[in-house]
Length: 157
Image (cartoon, rainbow, N blue to C red; front, side):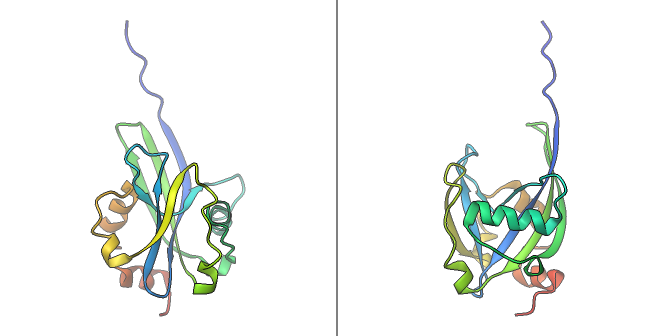
């Protein structure tokens, strides 16, 4: 008996590269992935949302963090394809740099998906191997250093 081909999925979401003034990125270990890979906060669009709407909603749902739309900067769009899973994901990558006061409000509101959130210096993070494919695609676009990210997003430090 012939096996039916696996269904293909295409979806679109937002990930936010969230930095503090020490140039550390906030990432979490994802429980919902068998290898517990590191990922940036984010998720899929809801109908009618702008990039900023989706980013703000996801940060609030996952981290209890409330940011205004003008605190988000567009970085790039990643065309991430997982051939083995028949999964195609368009990642809208946003960037935000937050204060210590804002960071103090962060809580893990999505514990069934993310084991924990941690701040890691970006220069160290880019050396990690246990990260979502999203970051591989991001690095291929030249965003493997924080200066390139800040320059493209127009973030003044």
